[in-house]
Image (cartoon, rainbow, N blue to C red):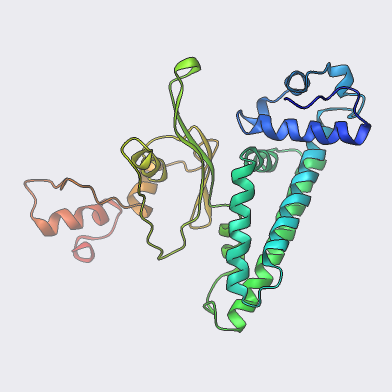
Length: 284
């Protein structure tokens, strides 16, 4: 860090420590961040670091407290003065995306805490943050239904869950060490049911890599993906049978017609549903 961290008042030192952890989480797995790494990043000794925090858990709690305060304040400010619930939701979503883009390590730290089996103060802080965020979203979703901006059949809880995290911090790295190359780095996006999205970019920009990750064809290096309100990837696949996921929930239309030459058109189209267990007559 360029900022001088020695001889700072206690509160300023704590703030710089939080900033250092968030920066480190933007470039490495949060579970691998040690107090030694934090102290090195701040150009301090571990002893100096522990004069302000009794242990690593206290540092993580301070970081999660900072995230909760900054994120909730930002989304509330973004929706302030907007009469339309739908416009407020859109403003909150864009504010959320901007926050994650500025602090790519935050989603990894939050969902890393939620994965911990034990209950910790930092984990409870994250749970409280998500609960408060969801309650705010559900209130707006209900208002949107009442003023006919949203469908009355919308599942508020599912919509709020998808809003908070669909694809966050997605990365794909090839190689390692000095030869490492990121085809994807901190991709954050949300695609609503029925929405059509086009990926535009020059050759080599990562379009095919992103589609292969989303289609469960290749493994991302890091990040989180949610499909139909189900976490399918979070620092590793959460679905036991990827073949069934691709067969039943994901479809590809390739540039080249990958047809089985000895089957007619009807048989080619009916093959996939039959593999999924649907009888021959219905498949046709």
